Image (cartoon, rainbow, N blue to C red; front, side, top):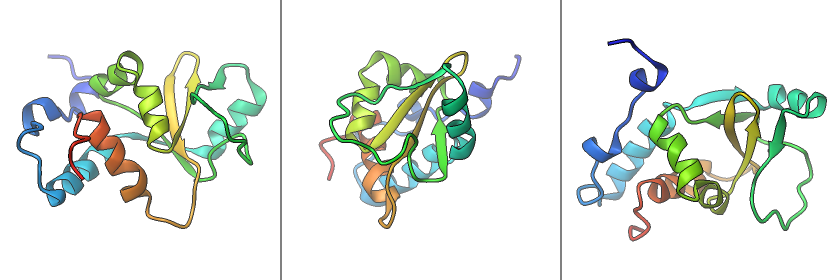
Length: 144
């Protein structure tokens, strides 16, 4: 079998972490850490330069009612999904809106796909953004 990025970095929450089993907060934290550690990390400065110099990137964050102070999130790293199921969720299951509801800014790059970042500083991103996104991604909103 030919290896792909998707097969090498696969985290299959459907088989390894069913919703009915993951009810303990410690388990949620551990699974969230594993999930996030498998994303591509992209320096925001590279994305900023592309945004300023090309028409190949656009912000697609829905309901942008607030004015942001900058073109890019202020955190110095942005991410993109590796797993094909995460990519499908993003585009096919209203994932862009759900990610925005978890505090992410989302961009689309032609010939690459979606990237996302956090526009914030001075608080715990993991508990404020990543855990809510993980719960939303695997449909665990019923958990606190």
